[in-house]
Image (cartoon, rainbow, N blue to C red; front, side):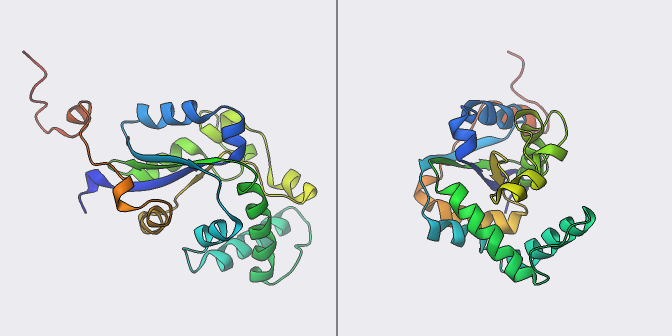
Length: 200
């Protein structure tokens, strides 16, 4: 695959849609030089949300271990010592969150798309996301607050973690016909080696 055409999935979650952040999210990604090649609004089903998170066969173990470690760092007891059991709770909360209303799914393309999107988006927990990131600027939710309420953390967006994960997630959310191949004029400024065509 041409590295200039790396693709990644972004899903604006129900809280991002309800708070009118669709345009802001798109603006920030577009300004980085990435290209939007697919988008649609849907209300996912509970089964679809499960398929989305389980595209990575290691997701349940990784998420469970990370959650258990997070509890311990705060001096709290996790709900279970079994990572799979912990992740089942996380997954149920994610299902309730993502089926609550419409989401906007998008595919972004460009060199380093996965990493750039994640950098602009911010870390998974909004409270610890840097100022200047989407999550850092637009929400103050935290794992602690979400855990005390028995819900998923409301962090506005999902962004693929790796190029491999992105490929699987994109094929789940979009058919090949829904992804558009086209040129943007500003791509010449990013990718043209000699910057030909600037002068008359």
